[in-house]
Length: 156
Image (cartoon, rainbow, N blue to C red; front, side, top):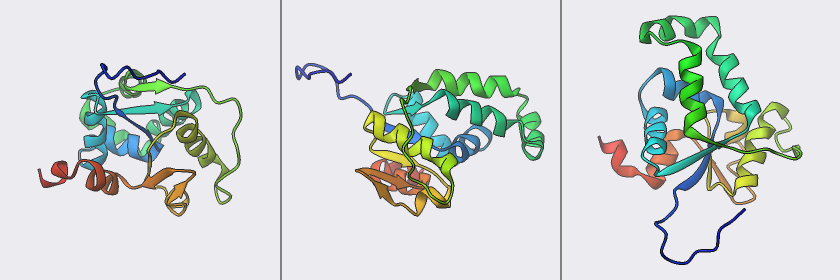
């Protein structure tokens, strides 16, 4: 799946995986999660996800506690999921290795990051953040990601 570099291509965007909580924050509010989505729009990062991760996002966006904000923005859940689907590169995982003992539902994020050779898994989830890194993938908060890779965005 990897291409051989001829040296003529422009530098490819940094590969990242973002957790559902980062998607929700970025889609519904501004702040650092939103800036990460903007970086993907600008092709400075490439977000990878699985179908199950996008399905989880759709489910979470339907939570009753999020509906006032969604309605305030005047967008339907399908609008958010269409945007997310257009922004990600989809990946299919053959199997999911257990990693996050405290919350096995989080394993898909770690496995996705490993499968695509992501530099970062960006999350606000304490079970994931407690790992700090896994097999070369740094697991960081949105703020830590921007601080390490795009510090100029924090000054804005």
